[in-house]
Amino acid sequence: MSEDTILEFRNVTKEFPGVTALSDVSFKVKRGEIHGLCGENGAGKSTLMKILAGVYPYGTYSGTVLYNGKELKLQNSAIQAAVREGIAIVYQELTLVPAMTVAENIFLGREPVERGSIDWDRLHSETRSILEKYRLDVRPQDVVRNLGIGQMQMTEIAKALSEDAQVLILDEPTSALSEVEIDRLMEILQTLKARGVTCIYITHKMNEFFRITDQLTVLRDGKVVSSQPTAELTPEKVVGLMVGREMKERFPRGARQPGDVILEVQDLHAEWAGREVLKGVSFALRKGEILGIAGLMGSGRTELVMTLFGEFANVTSGAVKLDGKPVQIKGSQAAMRHGLGLVPEDRKRFGLVLPQSIVRNISLANLGQFGGSLAVDEDSELAASTRMAQDLAVKAPSVQVAVGSLSGGNQQKVVMAKWLLSNPQILIMDDPTRGIDVGAKYEIYKLMNALAERGIGIIMISSELEEVLGMSDRVMVMWQGRSQGTLDTREATQERIMTLATGLA
Image (cartoon, rainbow, N blue to C red; front, side, top):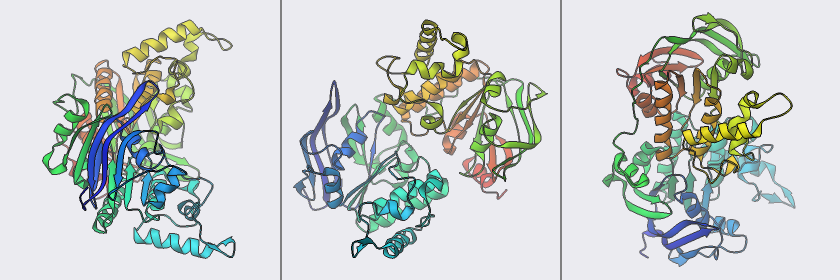
């Protein structure tokens, strides 16, 4: 192991009952580099990082992990041992305690103590120093549950940075961050790199690999299929390595033919908790069209679609028309009666009941189809849910397994199946490919095209401008609760969208 190598995996294999998650994984990570790790969901990325972080202790896998030239043997209290070795990990699923402050979370288990009691002044001053050092937009006394998801993610990152890590593992760090916060994170990583910190970076956003990483290792089905400098690769080549086949286009266009206007929103204003969240939004959606909604985090995109679905703000002025007729939608039941479906931004909190089966999740919004108010025809429920799962190619051992056991892409398909069973005229999709691998994204895109070709109008929010331009017919751009205009994607550019999204136009 050379001096410039900080980590080396040699023939690492990890098995679970009936599944080989990792098979003879071997590659090196250089000291002070940003090393990308990519692959589809289930490729073994997180399993490998959990070995490195002590979640799977030494002895539960075969092969060797070398760290600073010595074999890493994390056994008793393995997670704490990894931290002591200078290995920190930021998981995709946040591990913060909501009722505690930012400072308490950052130093949880490592609180400075003076005469047997926590030294609160020192705790807050050291937290403030970390936050100021990396220019993170939170305060030590902020209670975590009151923060936005992006601020929570930054707090999680600050917690890892506070441990003076030699190796920092980031698993989907930007999935909940705004463009401004992503830029800040990239600056932080470059600063850490300059200080000799090694970063292992996992993401499903292809552009981030090419923006920040020096080396890229690709896993497929638990095996390394490539490990080479990022500069020698292209996005198309990486996608091909990940999925094992060439993908000629990242964003399939299909053969959709938008028709008449089905939904019209005119100068919509709305309030929530005494605050005006929508300050004049206007747009139209046509049958068989994919209308993208773009804007920075906080622009009001999610607030808009949740209000249209009757589950957020109170409309104070303006009009919503379906097929030319004014409607007032108050609640999700009314939205469904008017032919609307909503695939929410946070599928785990608002779209699924994770311990329940695929069958029950698909039928949940459609129980009226399977009997009266007191009983459900379980045979009909099973048949309909199975048909929808098959139509959307949900990959699972059985439709009776808990939906929480599925990959992110298959969970998203279950959410879509639930709403498609209700035969919507309009399907609202809020960041539908967030946290989903490239192969699953492509399947979601094809489903969206198929639905649009059937005449369903689709509203798609996306934080990825490439996705907005690649999948939409037109794009409505929002800024501070207002619509800034609607662009035809044949003429739109990322620069034009960002000009509108930042209020410069």
